[in-house]
Each structure stands twice: as C-alpha cells, then as structure tokens.
Length: 202
Image 1 (cartoon, rainbow, N blue to C red):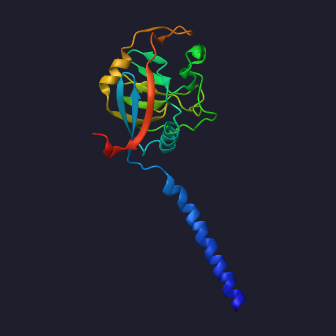
Image 2 (cartoon, rainbow, N blue to C red):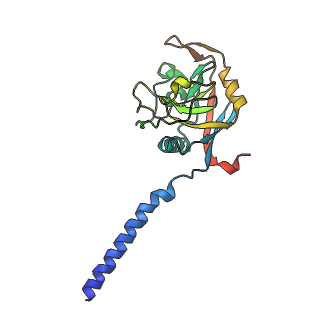
Image 3 (tube, rainbow, N blue to C red):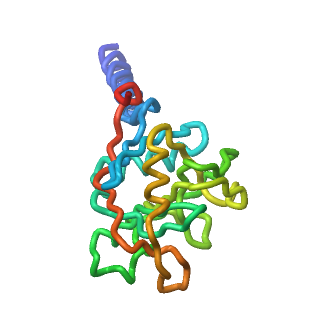
C-alpha cells in the first residue's frame, strides 16, 4: 500500500512539473500591449503591432530589437512615394555597401500574409522571391501600395512619427547598383529599436 501511495505521489509531482513547464513559455512570452520605438538620427517613430495578424513575425521583430540587432543599421533603400527599407545588419558597415539588402539573421521565418493592407505608415517584412524568406529586413510604406497586399507580411503601423517617416522618405537618392533610384546619398541611421509598454509612450 505504501509503495502504491509513493508511486501515485511521484506521478502527481511529475504531472505537476510538466504542467508548470508547459506554462513557462506562455508566462515568458512578451506582452501584446507593447510598442516599438524606432529611434533614428532624423527623429523617433513609434510602431503599434497587429498581434492578431502576424504573431510570429512580431515576436521575431521584438527578439531582434531586444538583442540590439538593429542598432546602428540604416535605411539602405528609399524609394520616393513607395517605402523606406532597413533592418540589414550588413548596413552597419559602410565598407559593405555592395552587400546592402542581402543580410539578415542566420534563419528565415514563415510568411503570415493577412488582411491588413499596405497603407502609409504600415510596417511590413521584406523578402526575396520565396514567400518564406523574411528574416530581419522590414519596410515602412510612404503611400498606399495595394499590389503588395497578401504578398508581404504586414505586422503593424506607425502611431507617432509620421513627420519623421516623411523626412526620411524625402532623403535624396541616387541609382543603386541595380539601377533603381533608391540609394540614399547620406546614411539614415537607426540608432536603436526599443520595445516598451504601450502606456509608457505619451
């Protein structure tokens, strides 16, 4: 009888530990009520996330931001009346200009196409021809771009800093190596991206 009681007690403790372990990821998952402050040398932009639309994309963006991955990168591609693109770690180094647009983390994330459209101020993930090839690079729309809807993963929008977006979008550009009028004539630096509680932003 004592042996049976011991086994039952051991089993109960094991189940309790499994239950606790299962809860841990949920407890450590970052709060949905957070925003990103993109601090640039032209001013700050604040992004509100669409947690209903692209939860994994958002968690990836937050993880990279918290690790300092974006600090010192630039908006390496600016197309007037279209978008500004950043998030490439190669862009931290002026000597690697020929590699701008090719960098990212050592992994890719799956697309989360959704019904949020590409309007001015919307942030979306940059990718290659493969829909599941996004990593760290993102772009912010300067105007509505409906042709990108359901083709790129939108995951939030600016709630502050539209004037900063406009200022960056007006940066003089020249032709890139590929012939596109999108290469900024000066570096537009992302000093940091901070993830903070939404209610801390006035």
